[in-house]
Length: 178
Image (tube, rainbow, N blue to C red; front, side, top):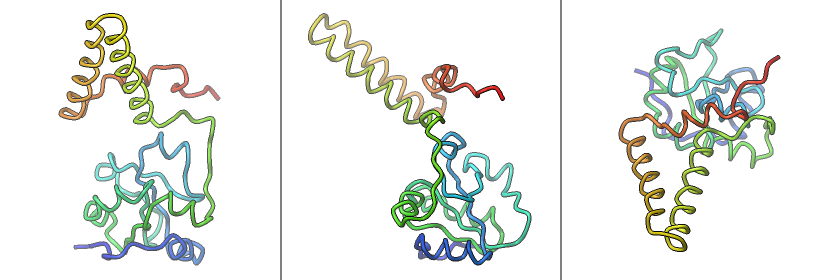
């Protein structure tokens, strides 16, 4: 059984392994996160589909996994090791540490904000509006905040987020025709 080393690689060490051709960098964030910001040369393999689709790498180089902060790679180390089958590592601090170390990062400012951030922004605004209107106009507006809270609780318990599904239909989240 493959396991990840207990100590993550510093971003500089990971970059050196990549430059030497010994490793490949695999980003486990979802496609919408990867589209907006990623380490140059990283491959996208979302954690949500990793077991079902595998890594699909062309050779047997070491695999270095990354995410945004290192939390997802740290929390899913054994899953990542199982999918990898060979030598595997994670980047300490993830993409944020990679960027802070001055290593190359690609930005696509035209890509929409990550879906989770859009949900957080809309949910927060709805709660804020509900509370302000509840205090200033009528206590009935507190129902908006309650409805959003119930929706977030349902999303957390079931994995289905209706707000994310609605936001996915927004014009800014639709793919641009080539």
